[in-house]
Image (cartoon, rainbow, N blue to C red; front, side):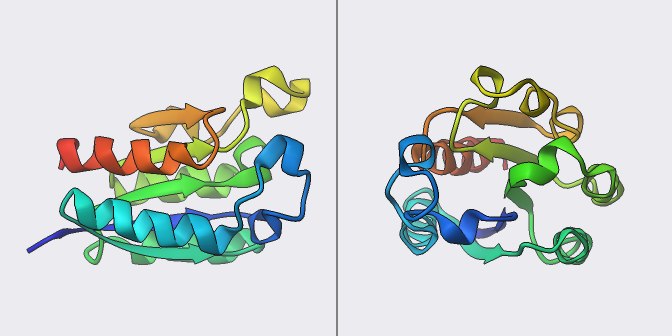
Length: 144
């Protein structure tokens, strides 16, 4: 049976392809989700994708992943820099999480340099655009 991975995307990622394409690229979230499902399948993973602009909904999905999914790929968007609640949810469920950012958060504004997710993540991929999701899925396939 294929290992199950939940790919979660946070606020404003539903605006990909429209919002600052020079920073986030021209692919839409639908394009990225389609690629994640295909890339996951190629390495023996079953992938489900979700997006929310609501912090509490992301926390709930992380909590509900326990017992249903084997790992998470999480692009928390701006919540990386503000959400202790997401940090605590990841700690509580204990699933391997790879944090993904399309842009290099360390080369941007100073307030983006700190992530509350990174300390509880298995790994962090940033600055590689949409290919960061593929790298995360490949890493999880090896880890699981």
